[in-house]
Image 1 (cartoon, rainbow, N blue to C red):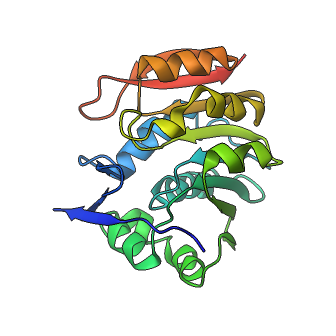
Image 2 (image 1 turned 60 degrees about the vertical axis):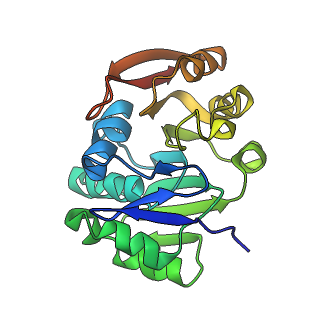
Length: 222
């Protein structure tokens, strides 16, 4: 059985992990953050093509997945977008629904996902998307994964609060499960994260961050 997320809530419907004492997305605008950091940071939607595969560390509310799905549908690419996420502490469906209520554009496409999630599905297909959320410690589940992603969303809780999801060995596994020329993006520009990505084989750059964050990280597999 999944270990579920333990939450507090801030004004505006922002969930905060009690385990990591960190919000699940930007207090400014989580959907805009997803688009700035994870889509634009990976050169999306311009890089979309049939069979494109996104992988993610830290599924959370599914907001990044829904942002990608909205962009995919708008781009009109043939075939489904593939999306794989690794999550140690999945949120319950009612909590995800509560969080997504703050983003009408995402909420409008979330119904089939929430229905599948509420029934316990961790692999689901919804108009234009083939998704799988792999529950458990990514340090164990990612090395055993058989896939390779074209783009990575590195969205664990802050490195200072959730260091396990930013360990050099795990980021090396990310590189090993990235297609040639693939990319990764994260809201954090912590030096240890950038160095670990570089040591794993990525060419790493800093880019303007979202909201109050001065910088974020973009990386391309060399």
